[in-house]
Image (cartoon, rainbow, N blue to C red; front, side, top):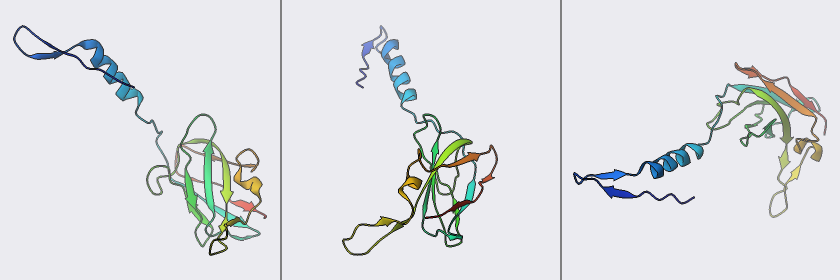
Length: 146
């Protein structure tokens, strides 16, 4: 977007901004701001075949048009904490589809492989959902099989 601000000389010699370009600039600045709802801490657990899925990535896909997807990495104990903008800040309250990927590097130039079924990596097929409440939320455990 190109915004042109014009200056005109007043009778007293002071530069004045024409009101229309200023209004356009203000509107452009406001509309370019990213809006993110307030987040609340969100934690959970991921187990695969009854054991912690250490290193797996958990991604929450908000229902609706929100472009930001909170995510977290599963620790050695199977627990994760979500991050939206800053580390462990959680997620906005609402309903989410959840995906989980657990990549194993084969080493060298070989491509990494997902230890889980590809269906868990797609929000339309994972079958995993979560609700983030207006207060800190510990979502129910995701117990997966490969």
